Length: 232
Image 1: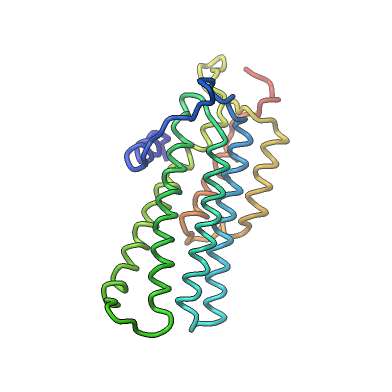
Image 2: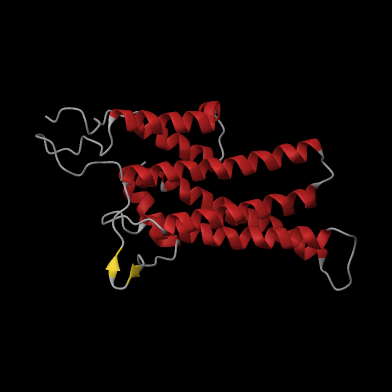
């Protein structure tokens, strides 16, 4: 998947904001390794909430609406924490809009999950006067569709996330063949992915979050050389 496609999707859908400054001084650039490590953690946290909610519903099929409220609340809290973490980071050009785009997606997801929780609450406790339950029921798949669209866009941005690890200095053949991380650091990222997602990344059918992790793993396994390997 071309990195330009991911960039266009992010730039076209998300609300781009500039990197914050403190007293006119820009924050120092965040280590690209630290950024990618955090992003993998965020994917894992979201997948854990989804999987936990799915398991909870299997154990108690009658808990649809309470499960909806519970999972929606967890998603909101986790996404809020992730936004705070990412807004404390900064990447320089050509990656300077990546973090603002990701956080804009997260902010939109919080609003959608908040609305999902509100709908779940409306259905608990029996019918209430003046509530159009048919309209609320019809709104739920619309919200899921928007969430799915955002997760798809985040998946499409995965190559862009990986691209932050590419050393833009050309080798003797004019190619960007090295990463900015060492072999040990690269192995640690792969270990994080394998530990957090395991065999899910081998499944034929994957949700967008797992697919994003699979894309990152695939790029980390490509024939880029690590920063501590010889240049040609």
